[in-house]
Length: 250
Image (cartoon, rainbow, N blue to C red):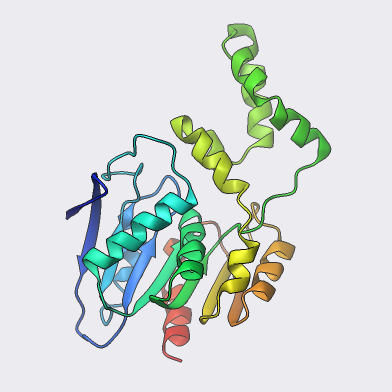
């Protein structure tokens, strides 16, 4: 399916359910992903209608002409919901970058009933002095990479200091840099709806102390740590779905 929002074509899927009373599950994917990243989970919730979309820049949705970050994506999601799921109860499931949008959405609107967050980074990362110095020299490094005999060295340094998402950002570099440094602690403290936080033990992007702080900031939240990787919801959909069903039924 496609819908036009602010002159952008947005690709999405909207599935019905066998129970019209249950809230809609809105699923917001992470970077370098697309709407069907949640397929394994969706299959385990036939009792809920589901709305999933390709965020602009990803897969089948149109690319914006300018640089977007969390606020712009959140505005689009709000308009999308008004068109696709007006006046319906919403449960948001955000993964990775989708978590960022979910936090912004919940802190600025009252349309969400419950929030489920799978991996996130609402607190800016703390870099070492060496890493900060190297990052401040990023424009110089980009220029040096144009020199054939230095390209391999500069690329190796970048791999040591930057996340996998950054290395795959390509033309989205400006967006990614704004996203990872965006401090959402004030928004986290404004969330007052039931929230489920799910972290996995192989998370090497967000330190456990940041997770605990986010859990403290969100007043009505539950926090669980599971064995697995960044895509634990694909690796262990039955376990994740059981946790979600328990959470949404209370």
